[in-house]
Length: 275
Image (cartoon, rainbow, N blue to C red; front, side, top):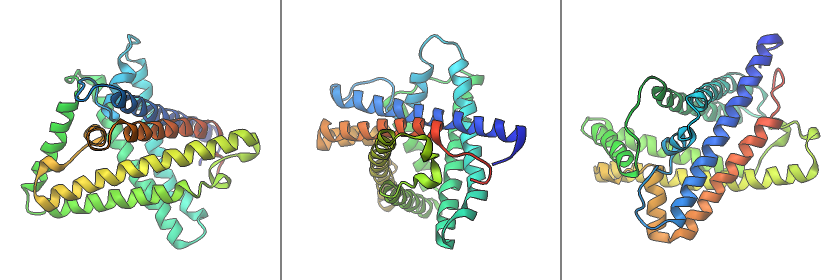
């Protein structure tokens, strides 16, 4: 991280980004848990990042929450870019460095896209998302790709990358490195244990969800059927339909725990220069 006054602002922006990231996961977990408790097929805000944004800006607080969310997501994307460039130099091996660089680069791209999508709400009033409209958007994107000559191969590649990311997240859930990420000396022992618990559980839940996302993307490519693609909300509803509400509630709790982990990370993450 940068030094001096610019470094102070950059670290503040990074912490804001982590808070916004945690808030999105808290809201997605809440919406998924509400879906698990609700009657099958209940309409309303989708249990996804889009639904989380809707939930965040629903109260009559004006555009302030939306501005903070866009700023936080942009700051987090910038943090991921900086980590992709600088943090691998602290890795223990070349393989670990490239793995960190790949994960951070993916995070930068993902949250940049999320930031731009959310920023559209500041300049317009798009139709309110529902579970059905969000699923149609996912299907339309997949169908457009499948109509191209290289779309099937691209979907398979994307699905494999998503599943590889899920495996990496699962691996990290068992090897949370507080020496790298946290100023552990400022954390009490109970808080350290709590952070490991909610972080590990949250990472496992994220890993399971991403495996399902990647699986349905690959299935859509292999079967040449865009209808097989499922976003977060459709995956949650599929889990609820085929496995009952208990597994969905467990996934929802895991995502909620990851949101708590992000908030703890925002407070105790080591953002000193060179870290």
